[in-house]
Image 1 (cartoon, rainbow, N blue to C red):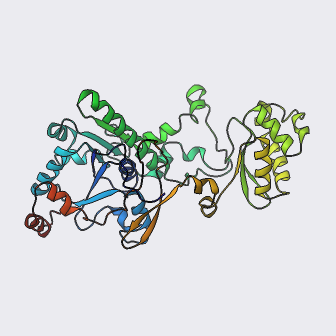
Image 2: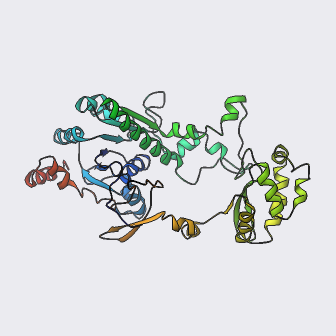
Image 3: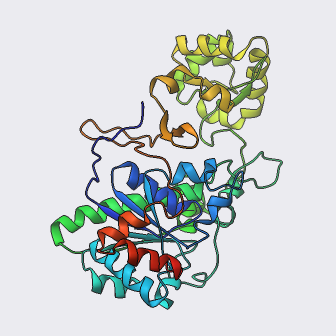
Length: 398
C-alpha cells in the first residue's frame, strides 16, 4: 500500500494540535490518518520536544511516526500578535487538542470557556496526566507513572518478580485512542446540536479503565490480583511456552479446545488425569500442567508445534521478534507497513492505523512536517501577505 491522496472520512475537518510527547500526537495522528487537516502548532525555533528524540534530529523515526499527515505552524500564541493569529485559527477550526497541565490554557486566557465563546462549534479535547480536577490536577504525568499508579505494573511480571511495566507506552497510546474516540463522538453529536463540547481523557483514567477485567475480583470480593507472567487468570493452558528453538503461545481456553490440545500434543491421558480433566482443576494445577507441556514442546521447534496445533484447531502462535513480525505473511498481506515519500529520506516506512473502511481511506498521505514548513500556506490563508509573514518571523512570533 503506497502513499495515497484518497479522501478520508474526516475530510473537511480542521484540527488544531497543541500537543507534544506521545498521547496527544497519537490522538491527532489518528484524526489525520482519517483525513482531517491537522495543524500542529509549535514553539518558534524549538518545536515539539519529540523532534529531539531518537537520533536527535527533527526527522527522527519517533517524531515521524506520530506526526505524519500533519502541517506545522510555528506560533507564539501567548503574545498579543500571536494570540490574534491563534483566535483566527480557532474561528475556523472544528477541533482543538491539547495536553498541557489542566490550568495552563486558562492561565494563558485561552481555556475552554474563552474558546467556546469565540467558536461555539469548537470541540476542545484536553488530554492530561490525571484530569482537570481533584488532588492530582497539577501533578505531572507520564506513561510509566500512570502504569504504576493505575495498577498495570502490579499485575505485570512473573509471580516471583517485581512489578513490571508493559513493553509499550500503553497509557499514552490508550489515552490518544480514547481522545480520538471522544472527538469522533463529539463531531457526531455536533451534527444534531450544532454545538461543540469539551472532552477530557487522562493517563491515570486510561490505566484504570484498562484494568476493568483484571480488577473485577477486587471490586467484587477484595481479592488482590497477583502477577501471572504470561499466564491467563481464568484458563489453563493459556500462556507462553518454550519450545526447542524459541517461544510460542497456546490458548487452550475452553474444555473442547483443551481436549483437542491434549490429543494433538500426543497425551490423551491428560484428559483422564484428575488434575487436568476440568478447567477448575487445571487452574489449581497450572504449574504442573505447564511442566508437562513444556517437556513435550522442547522436543521440536516452534514451527512444528504451530502446524500441529493449527491443524487440530487449537489457537496458537509464535512469539515473534520484530524482524520475524514484519516478515510474517499475514502481516505482509494485510499491508500493515506502508510507505510515504520524503524528499530527504526517500521511501519512509510507517505502521498504518489498523482500521479499514470500505468507502473511504484511513491512510498515510504525507510524511511528518519540518518545523514551520506550512507557515506561509496557513498564514496566507488567514490573509497575511509575504511582507507580513516576514515581519512575524523577524519578530519571532512565528
